[in-house]
Length: 182
Image (tube, rainbow, N blue to C red; front, side, top):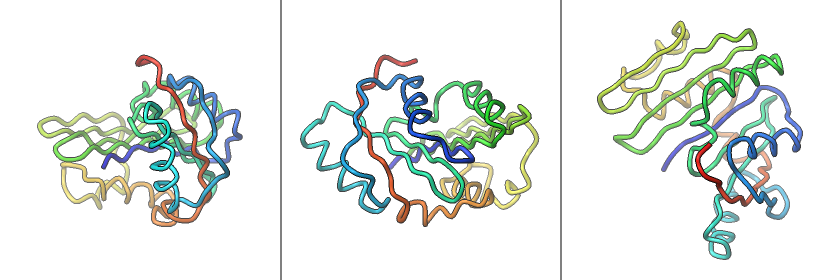
């Protein structure tokens, strides 16, 4: 299973979330029902997928002082880094992007700071790319390979309880059509 999240410090309103989805190439967005706890999202999405298999299902929530966005394809996380850096500067907050594909796929994170700095690491089976100064938490990572557990450790080091994030906060689920790659 792919892990692909964008976490923005602070509470973005629904209009800002919708604008990010649109800027990422999602069209015809439609909120599905009422927000549901994280643990129930999968069931809701699977029920909807049976009715509308041509849609991608986006999720977002606000929890622990962050707005968390997720999509199934990874389109959000794979947007050009400059988009997230501009958002961090404009809002004066940190923006974290994490992306982990099943083995032997790519694992990556980027932390965008309000002053325009960025730390990013992307690791695939035979390649590693780094930008910016290493974060202290990287010393706790298991190896140079960058595992999904390392991405979760990074998120937790920023004050987000990842287990809670997966279970408790109410997520809004949006069905969307994905336009051609942006």
